[in-house]
Figure 1 (cartoon, rainbow, N blue to C red):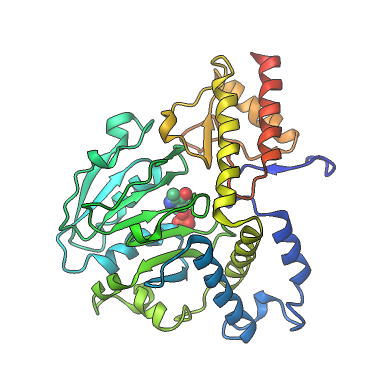
Figure 2: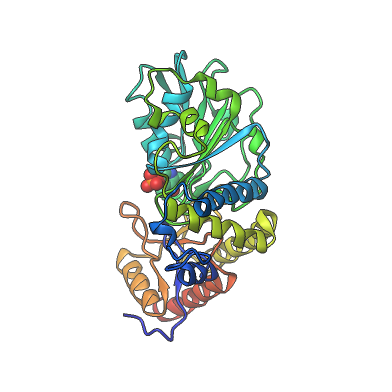
Length: 369
Ligand SMILES: *Cc1c(COP(=O)(O)O)cnc(C)c1O
């Protein structure tokens, strides 16, 4: 146990840090939401109180991302992993091919799953592992994509490999873009109109696990076959205002509080500036350590959300994680197959958290470098 007097900063990749004020509000409303005498958790999803929460969450997300009116918003379940197949079931009917860009762990899993419930060819458009051993992302000019494909799928921020498309791919000449934004949605401004579908599990940069945001361009909804069961059909959820079955009420409620918090911070443009500062500070600490700390990723593809780094040995990495944890810098261990460290510095991580980490890095290097 870490003494409670120590300031904690949570660098978990997901489920991840939430703003303190959001948790405090949730705590104060836990037993009695807004004078109703009930917790959100124990209330009907069709109650006025919850319907209002869902409506407001949608409005606030629309405002935050400037989502055009011809896009629908859903709060689904099943995580981003369920979307790997849902996008195929909903968008690929009548098509022979989809294009898939592999840039790291998550898009590699998506690639391996997308063909399973369909006869569609999952065409490998580019493979960042083969090309760069996952130290860079293939530029759009390297994607082998056909305009006749149902869509092209890619992951804009690879949570495990610490890779990000800092230059956001533009839709020119591409089929509709389906994008996994799980670990960066709301971290920087995007142009929603560039996408056919955006999806994101909430537990990285939004809220608790259990809710998955799907933003979909209206005209694509017509593609879905009658044979797809309603539970996996976007249109059936939209027709029933997100109430086809019981939605993840509590995760949606917390996500809504996070949207409010983000609006109060000045929205996505404001948080984008802070996120850039945080990432620059951390990568500078790595680059200016004289080689004690290393990050293998090309500068233009370094993730501003998930920063991976290594000391000279696996043994020292272990010491780093243990000692950092004892000082309140929590969950810095790298992904199981990657080793080393990973600092996830999502929206809710304050600049002071990153400064505490870079201070600790310097101190650790003084003692072990
Ligand atoms: C975490 C993550 C996933 C998997 O999300 P689940 O909600 O666990 O299904 C997929 N893609 C990315 C980019 C992720 O970070």
